Length: 362
Ligand SMILES: Cc1ncc(COP(=O)(O)O)c(C=O)c1O
Image (cartoon, protein in one colour):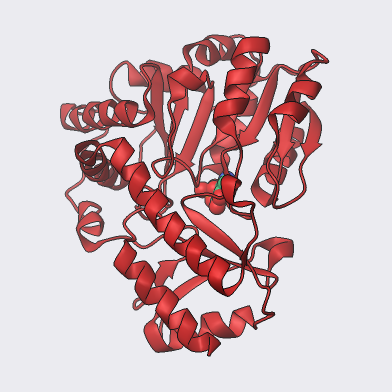
């Protein structure tokens, strides 16, 4: 019997498995968030995050999950008479378009079929109308396991539409796949820490361009909790506007030391190796849901070509090995299943898990 005190090892695409040494960081003595010890922790952590995201602009930490920054991006950087182009290709990018609407902004939807990416050509065609102040884009769509060609899209946008703001959800991409914020010319990107940072859920790392901060100054009714002006003011003192989740920031600091020491190219290569391995297994036994060149290196969505009972296999693996992987998301439930390979999961963990699934398939 498993219960919350003896939980299964997680291979779902977030929250992911967290190592004991990372968990220990969450039980350190707390600090006063206006004291110099906190500022030291904050400054050290932000400096490492900037290196990891290849930016000299602004990096903030929000005590919210990533959905908060979906809303923050819109409320801070899109004026009430402006229109957003929402690039949609799965459950999470679809949801972000809903959030734009719920913030009272105009939105136009650019939909790709689930399993396909949003393409440079389609985005270019839409932007050529000159109607849009900003676009929303997901880097790795966690429901389908598809990555958008964000480098190509960004290159096209920098060359042809430099005034359109670029907001990128990197929730299941950041740390696991290349992200050069300044070179890409993005205005906002973010990831909650329960994905490739391999920390329990509770906060979100986000980067904001200088021009996005400048724009937000003149946008009315930005609200209080996610006001970028307040984040920027507090950042100048190495603080956050409100009491942050200090234990998480200690864990981010700990993980960032590891990532910076390993080198981001090596961290990305490690994720690619895990992605290749799981994709190889998936192709041998089933089929990939995403075309391979658009497949994410942090999770794999597998087409259930053998019509197995996904729920039963997950249950059997859990009962025998106290480990779970993910069913398909939303309308992809049962017709696909998902295996996460990010954060502190390693090749041995994956070999073990896939072996256990193999045993259930015999
Ligand atoms: C791509 C993507 N965006 C946004 C979210 C929402 O993140 P959170 O649950 O941290 O609010 C998720 C959650 O899995 C996600 O995968």
